[in-house]
Amino acid sequence: MARKLPATDVVIVGLGWTGSILAHELTEAGLNVVAIERGPWRDTSSDFPVTHAQDELRYHIRHDLFLRPAQETLTFRHNARQTALPMRTWGTFMPPNGVGGGGVHWNAETWRFLESDFVLRSHLTERYGEKFLPEDMTIQDWGITFADLEPHYDKFEYLCGTSGYAGNLGGQKRQGGNPYEGPRSREYPTPPQKQPFGPTLWAKAAVESGFQPFPQPSGNLSQAYTNPLGVTLGPCTYCGYCEWFGCGNYSKASPQVTILPVLLRKENFKAQTLCTVQRINTDSTGKRATGVTYIDSNGEEWEQPADLVLLCAFQLFNVHLLLLSGIGTPYDPNTGQGVIGRNFSYQVTSSVDGFFEDKNFNPFISSGAIGMCIDDFNGDNFDHGPHGFVGGGYIGAVQTNGRPILSTRGPAGTPSWGAEWKKAVAQHYLSTYTTVTHGSSYSYRDVFLDLDPTYTDIFGRKLLRMTFDFHENELKMSQYITDRLADITQKMGPKVMEKHPRKGPYDVNVYQTTHTCGGAVMGDDPKTSAVNRYLQSWDVPNLFVFGATAFPQNAGYNPTDTVGALAFWGADAIRNQYLKNPGPLVHA
Image 1 (cartoon, rainbow, N blue to C red):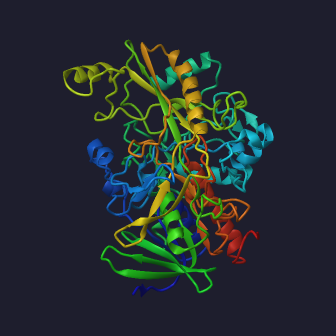
Image 2 (cartoon, rainbow, N blue to C red):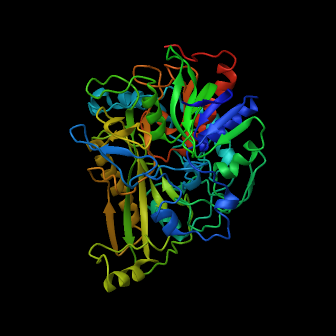
Image 3 (spheres, helix red, strand yellow):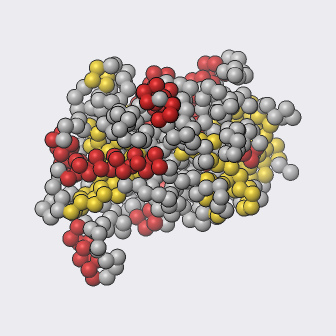
């Protein structure tokens, strides 16, 4: 029997980027907020001090910052004909664990989505016709536009101190920035990071190829910066320990660095760590959330009553909680009906390796989001008509690390061990350069999340089941943009070049990105979306669902900037609309 706690105005599930932003915004509005986090407390000064050497074995190989499968896992299958089996180790993506969530270990690539990404189905059908899209593709418009979200992108980027150079300032295109981006209301808060040799050489080749390369927008700061909350961030030291690692320099934008120092001083905010939320509670009608039930680290069960429930956990676990709580209609791929678990998507990445004889790229001089890119093959920035697919991605030279354990590339035919392997690694460590693509992943009728009928977790709850595989559209897209990347990389002058487009089937054991998306998506129609344009549940009006869970499909970018912008967008709707008149903000 759960012990009942005193009621609060707001309970937030998860204290990563979205949870921190919502907690700050709603405590500013005078509400009492309790945040419940499954993982441990993490703080920059104690968990990632500069006196503590970064350890690739501890963090990258042994996954120290991530959720353990023994705590929570899911089952996986490629299609509904297969029997799903539990994931015993994380491979293709890495669910975060602890305060700060994915904001602790991300690379800090801070991209805004394209204007067309938010009206994707309308845009593509208008340009190419409905029949051009695969019959089983379920992409849809978001219910909001880039213009709606732009002020909130701006707010998140100024919170983070994002480093970059605007290519579209108030509708005016500017040389040196991204010519395809939507109009910005103002310049980035800090200038771009200085580029090392590899991205500089690739950018030169891109210009020779007729493109307009620009510096990747980065949450690894180019200079010291004090954000609007009065928190000061330091400049990046180009150590190359960003993705999978916490930053001890206060130079990678994370909740610990940008917002938690202010939030924690507030008397109307409280955080509970090492507590696993079991379910969202509802009243007898099922139309009003009454709070959540959670289990603490001692195994005791507690009920936290609240007037407003905000789901801010990692995307997969938001969906899991909705299914376990019986909120919304579960998706059925046979009928196409239902919304919880529908439109799951991922990311499609690829690379090109160049092996040189006369160049030293110093790969260890790097940061998570340093690089030069082009957007000519992203979204619908090019004519897809002749190619038979839709979607795309940014391509470029993104120099993230030269860490010693895994930075051991050699050309095809290199032995995988022994004296010849050692010789090849020594020969190629400094002179090999990898360029990358970061492609979209669109949604399909046969790709979804639901509850596994067989396997349960340590609390006896059904595990989340993932049914996913790459489709022909995405594989064609990956081949095409990888070839375009290779065309530019070839101009850098490698002796040997190897292309690695994404191939099927999806390999759940090989890391690609942690950009899982969808499952409780936003939109204008409750028949095809779980939440409305303000991230409010259609079924339970005092429940809001945040993060990449709401993406109807994934674009050719990293999702975090859009996740942060949606958090500010939703917070604004709660403060200025919902609190004044609690109830549905959109009527179906």
